[in-house]
Length: 106
Image (tube, rainbow, N blue to C red):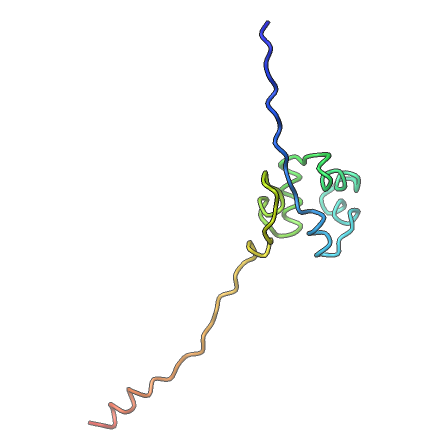
């Protein structure tokens, strides 16, 4: 019988602790929003437990961020503000005086 090598699992980094602090959510509050125990949130924050895809998506939805802004294979060093919806910039309409001058010149 051939032995199979178990592939080394790559870590999954998360920003849950930072996001909770920014939104003033306790572990118990966040756990209640996604239907898990507060201990589960703590284990995920410490990296002792990796969430299921469903739980990762639910956690991301609480913060209105894409999953990759909360969880990533690389250490998260960027701000989730980069994923925030951009407000359209509006500029005040400009008045074109050239048309009035042309009309009076004829």
